[in-house]
Image 1 (cartoon, rainbow, N blue to C red):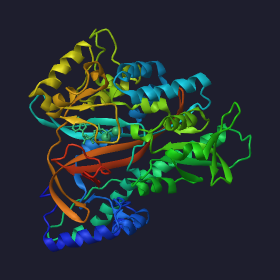
Image 2: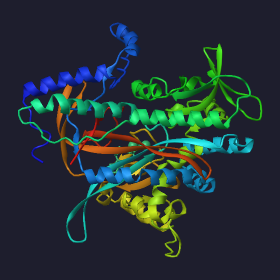
Image 3: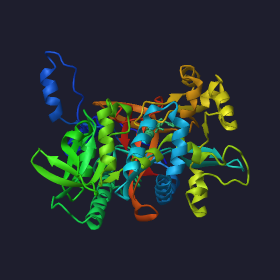
Image 4: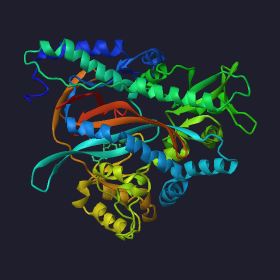
Length: 510
Ligand code: ADP
Ligand code: MG
Ligand code: MG
């Protein structure tokens, strides 16, 4: 491909910026502006903030992305769904995982407590809804015969509150719109745009709809209340429109309930069925068929014991959860590490890998190709080896250290690893994993952020959405749900769009 993205002059850039600014607001490719810190001057702004929208950071061009890698990621989503449905079903395995990290990780220990309390009560809902996103970076490998080979490597697998599916569909549409209108008029037009179909918000909405219908079919009404979906949200959420796009794609009553107010607005029926009841404005009662969580993954979502009671209430109810506590735990980084370890720590060649416990042999090689080296930091032989790498001032530069956290901003990179470990008591190191850094080939783009264009080297992270519904071994749904491309400047270690480093993007397959 000739120079990509095409070289543009100032006038062209300004024109593109304006077109993008208008399109983003007109089509809801937007977030709420931050609420300014209160001062006399800012108070009107503070009042206005909850009514305003601003464009989300977005690239001016779809980033060049290797077609073979995109197709490989798509081809694996069904196997990844099966893998994580099976892991969620395996309470004994998850219990072992929790036991390994709980010493240094109170949050995971608390989550597990919720599961154990509900287990004692007896779970009443056997169906679960999974809305997953498997995240990848492209890694350039050299094959045995010395040829370069591009291979997707998994960054992580998200099983709770996987975001940006609402905005991602719009980003694909924005780039398709520009490719049809603006790009051909540039002085050095880029001739070929291969922009794949992406209906992430519609398809994520369809999965919630499907779960709603499963509930309607399998749970005969005993109370005559209409049924609804609730989205549990974080306080001060700015990424509202992303969530709204998914909500608007569901053909059922959907209500947003702040997780901090869940106990005020919901109750569990005092009968063996334990329906979750939502009391709308204190007037109209609905029976909740599906709870879609866009919260609950960060310790700050649980500032007091009351929040843990709210999670317990949801978990013990009859609503179909997205996700259950077990599915949330299945998505922790320790599980990813254990799967990526070819053999159990005994290194007995006759012992099967953990992955084979959960997937058919026909799926195993494909999944494993996407794994990069991930090590435990426990007392096992490989854990002790990994501790040496993590503490070595040179060797540590090849790694990222991850705790069992979600939502960005929690990892330690390269030189910061030994310094961080020095602050953690050694008996708690097992709650971290040590992951080899994936090094993507250089890509270039222009990012429009807060009205300014940043131009230069970028790193693109592909997220593949997938959805599933299951009840034990019985799988009722296993579907793709579009993709996400998040792009960050190549000098930034973390790429969260909400955290302010990343931007929305879409793929131009090459
Ligand atoms: P979170 O659950 O908080 O999103 P991630 O594991 O996705 O945690 O890490 C956050 C970001 O850090 C990723 O989006 C990616 O930009 C970067 N990152 C994580 N792991 C790696 C890795 N192995 N190689 C390169 N970058 C990584
Ligand atoms: Mg995550
Ligand atoms: Mg991530």
